[in-house]
Length: 520
Image (cartoon, rainbow, N blue to C red):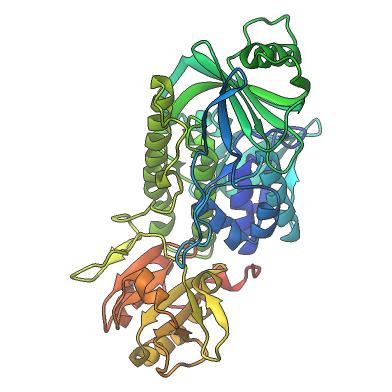
């Protein structure tokens, strides 16, 4: 008998997202971290729109919104003269299909704090000063050795997830290669500091030789992020070094670096593990892929790893066939490759000094990431539309049969699958599927105003659902728990839904992973 179902090594954003996903589903787990205190730096402070949707599903969106901003206006100076002004991306308005269209900036320490608060609400907590020192695995589980409080303990788990970072022991212990490159010539010093003499209304960039020095307000705090060339004199304190860099670059002696609360030297490190799984052990986040900071892809990709893996582990623990859990590696490795390509291309722009090096487009947002052609994506239509199996399922406003406003994301919210069937004539199909699969599947007819609608129907009052899904009457769209389209089929496809469901879950019965968990 396993002590826990899942042991998570590493309590950064990736591990915490996975823990929340497991807690929602009633999975027994432990999340441990070798450090003796929680991370206190800004580091990955850009939350992309797709991650905002994940946080909304996890029940975190209100504190995330309250803790950040859209990003500051930046100005490049020569002396006191402004030579450039702009933003990484111009804010855009929400649309029916995209409720969070802009990156949102929150210091990483606050993002982690919010995730831990949510985890506590779900009845779990991180175990600090608890180091995973070794593990072995067999066909039934993993035997892990933990060191905490001066003693060693043995833990038996069904699965182990290494979310322990690029230097973590899980990948190394598995012997999984981590190919890529580290460019020691491309380095930057990042620091969180209290700075006097400047306002928080915009960020400042000063050219400094071949590099630059910048001072950017840190969202939700009284701090600034100071970026400078790396320190090369060990006998100079970090505060004194940053003060000298800011004074020399700005040619102003009234900007005072008062206190440095966190700092790190970043090197251009781009790597992707050769695989994300070995038996019952998985890699997630930086343990499987490390990125340049350009484009804000690293943390966001790791959060998506945890969000993808959580529901699949829960289903596997509930008896789902191996194919469901097997899909984690190909789906997330492809996503990590895409994110690495994006961040590397942006870094190259900085190296070349391109005029638009600070500009970020929609490619960084994560909304176009898809699993088309993946092991869980089946599009059975002879003439697929613009939205296909494997794509992100768009949001859309609609109403219930009794006239209450509802959004599709409200219907997707929770650990279940969601079936959308377009057209009022298919109510009997929906009823049959709902009866067959129980609460693990929430099924809704998408009807036009004035068409017959029962309590489960979604009235497409303004046509945004049909437009967003490019769907015609009779189309069935099965939305996965992580908000991607698994199956898309044409009219008369109830048996295709049943076949698809049985392939993933074994038998056409309610999935325990969705009936015993905690409501979100």
